[in-house]
Amino acid sequence: MLNRLRVGKVAEEDDPDKEFPLPHRRPHRRWRGRAPALRWGLQHVALTASGERDAYDLPHVHFWCDTDDGVRLAGTRIGEDRDTAIVLAHGFMGYRTKRPWRVLAEGLAQHFTVYTFDLRGHGQSHGHCSGGQKESLDVQAVVAHARARGHGRVVSVGGSLGGIAVLLAAAEARDVDGVVSISAPAVWDPQGSKAVKRATWLFMSPFGRALARRVMGTRIHVEWGNPDPPAEVIGRISPIPVLLVHGEDDHFFPAEGARLLHERAGEPKRLVILPSFGHAEDGFTPEFASRLAGDISELLDAAGDAARTS
Image (cartoon, rainbow, N blue to C red):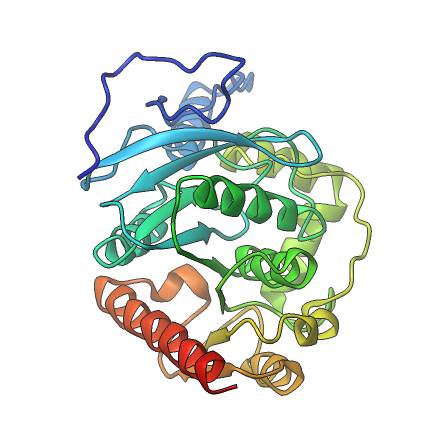
């Protein structure tokens, strides 16, 4: 079992891979509005958004790692040392101790070693959110961190923005043994659902970016490089197994996008459409985490059987 390390111990700057506890809160500049009640309310929301406490109930240790483009990421390793590791990437305006993602991480940690982390521009990680363009580098960095710790198999799991990131990372680096994308879009459609239009406004509007930074602690990059959408790259992941999970009640991206991703993906692949399931973290429960753990095990077993018979 992993033991909690002594609080207050810090990592040496020349040893960025050293695991250590860190307070899960990034400092926020004080909001300078004139109304004291509104100022306190926004500060409270911002602190909650960045994570006010080290909230995991299972044994865990924290870590830093750096991406190829020089962005430092904050993460947490949860659970026992096991052969299979999960690299878990959250969605837009998420962070690794946000309650739904914590529920999923700790549920998966009952079966695997879980490496959960803050995407760039979120939580304690440095950098700026790029809307999917560079988050694949974040996934690759944490996958390499997990590989360096001797796990025999590493599976990347992501939801929404994290789902985009794990698909692009697997297509680019081909460095994982399985990919699970939850509630990811197939194509870029800024004029899609009302929820997508709101998210697009946050990215494109100076006021929206300021609001995201002040209230949710999410720093958004002012430019977007329009990378290839997941539907254009998912075919390059095969023969790495892919599991696509989507909800019928997703208010961001319709389930037709998941069906398109499944159609474009190579074997081995599996599509799970869940009724009464919303968008990504909306459906994260202990029961969902347990089911997902079983689906991941089945996916890896099927891929192993296919490799042995080929």
